[in-house]
Length: 100
Image 1 (cartoon, rainbow, N blue to C red):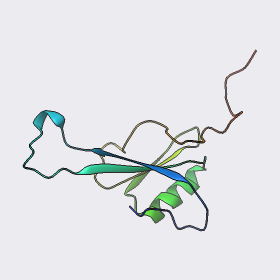
Image 2 (cartoon, helix red, strand yellow):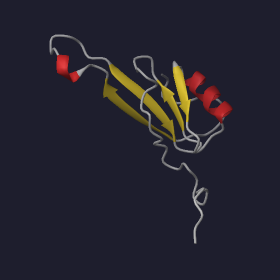
Image 3 (cartoon, rainbow, N blue to C red):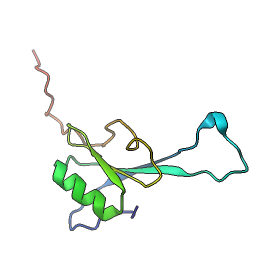
């Protein structure tokens, strides 16, 4: 994946990398492959998530219903991390819960 989406928008993002190897069958003589995912900090629409991730070179993407966008690298299984980790998403004041 590219280090930043080049789509004319300014995004901040965070990157998470973790080994894809099964730790139970770890063999130090074999090279390890990492899964790398990129989280956009700001909330985005589904379409903007898709477009931005394609421009980073991600092989897939995941858009969470809170507006968080995860771009998934080629060595990841099951679409990377099944958790919304965008720093500024959901936006403050957008809770669906009723406050009494």
